[in-house]
Image (cartoon, rainbow, N blue to C red; front, side, top):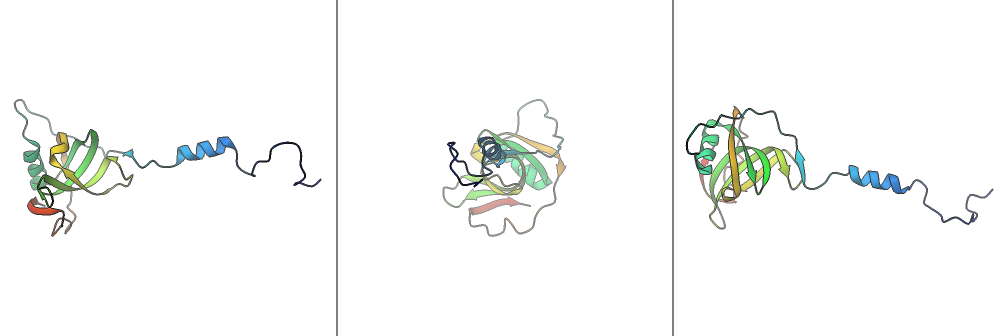
Length: 149
């Protein structure tokens, strides 16, 4: 029997089933996704008024502590390396090595720039980090670096 002979049924390409294609699409990584968060222990919050985000950022840099915060409503885990004014608009920004949480690009770990005004629920972890040298030196995105590791 000739395999190319008409059979009266519509032809499908070999190896292409609707179920297989659907499952394959579901397995593809999405561009926006959550990444595992390393096991962190956070400092206990004391009674009274919470320090400002700027004060906590400065403390994270000086003590080289891992920070966790909400940025534009998404959870991030970051090792903050530099804090200062942005080159364009002059807003306060931080440069950090993001190790966990949400990522638009889908690639972690990686260097990220964060606008301090968009940060909320800032917490410091008990764990520290070893800084990566040279990343904050002469970064053109900073007009002025106020503090760096």
